[in-house]
Length: 289
Image (cartoon, rainbow, N blue to C red):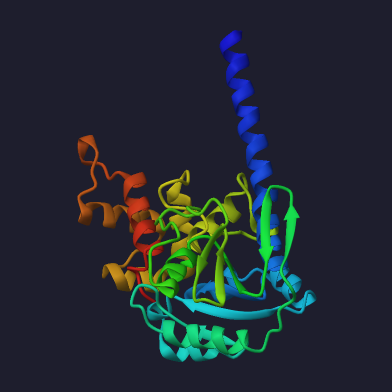
């Protein structure tokens, strides 16, 4: 009975922690908007609509703050598609952190907008345990969906690896400040999935957030289900990358598993390992559009 009680208590604490995290990260992002003069919303160029956070954009507009849409991973889609995407996003800069392209254009745009902003006298704002110091420096908040490349962008903009970077979704845990210049400070934030899209139980929402990089391929359960969703939406892209054809996701996983030699005892394909490998290639941008 005692062991059962201990397990139950730990499980309850985990659930409580998950609930607090759901509230905490959107709240931190909102506070960064409150504190910033300019906000960079980093988007995955492949999934611009899916990685936008409309609620945070509404908050930015409500506070009359300046926003710059940053299309990262632009090297993974065609120039024609990029032009179509950029039409509805003003101002917008397309970049690739991987190839370090578009960074100078973004840095110059930040400086141009910064010169048009009048700063108040220095004062200190305290909100719970997070302290934002308002001064004559221009603050540039960086927000975005998990794994869109926010920390990598800050490192490149600042010219040094001062913000923590990891390939796992949700690596950034705390607010970090990095100096861009004598007059401009960058503020990094944890990746935020819009509340209406977040779920730890709904398989449809979990699949979508994994496809768009919100959940890491190494952390999710039942990766085969996500591959099924991926195959339904991007069948031609997957078949083109792996140079195979399949009727369904099960056949697709089976063929990839044999090609990769991901086999269990008895010669059966290790479906879990194969599905995770496909998701890894997808999230890392190896499977191009």
